[in-house]
Image (cartoon, rainbow, N blue to C red; front, side, top):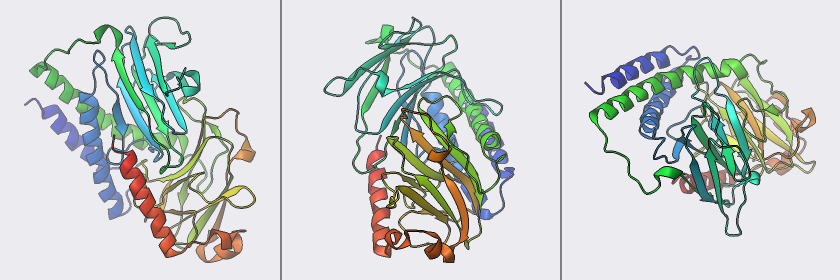
Length: 387
């Protein structure tokens, strides 16, 4: 059977999910099976999007194909490339806060992170008055408007990041192999179909193994209920710093995270589950950007991570996850960040919050106002994720 390798990989993937070391509750297992469904869908999509001669940008992750602690504020796209071919990328710049490009030399694996061969944001593009731009990637030497692909270049990744979901609009983007413009690819064959199912099979198990191992490298070796100083994000993404950690809280505890509102165009925070994916950011406030958050009069943003509703605007909902990951990102930076730009953490009981939050009265929010915040998230994600 042509599909046999993929069918076998699904069975192997289910065993990976069931054996995950963090499973403590039925909720953990249910979420694992949900994660598996998204991974199956994503692996098939990735395998069928693998065309280096007639390339197109595919959505790398989304609400139903999550991986790698996906950022709720980011639209991720990728295209596969050959290092010896020339590609032209054209598009229009939207009003989002950041648009970045990264060339990788391979796929993530359970033992390695792919090297970033080059990474830059749209400040390196020449953008016309109407928002249009063009940039080429190929084997030739780099120059303005042309990026050299390394000898082992394999993938072009594009990230478009929003800070205010409701007011910012995404741009457009497309990619073409220059010497194939106007041509058509050959019709698929049974051999090609077999290869794609085999590729999807390898992608599925590798994807699960990799992103269950990934937190061991960068998160779980840190003291629990702490956050690191801001540091360049592993993987070489241009102009991004991050602060990471993992939490373990009871339902009576709250984590107050205090961080300065940055001068960076994008500053965002999110929680992640032990499956190393975002929590439900559509129907719950499990993430906040600097534009979405309430900023206190002293210029600080105070986030409250808890299971119980503290009745404040910057509540970050745990949604039943007693353990998970903490992540800040700053993007489009024009300077390096230091410890003073990063977060501090304080653990208190939920009942203590009125005494421990210095601007508690200004932070309070009514149930009706909270419902309006969630409704705005639902609308914004529905419109932003149409692509």
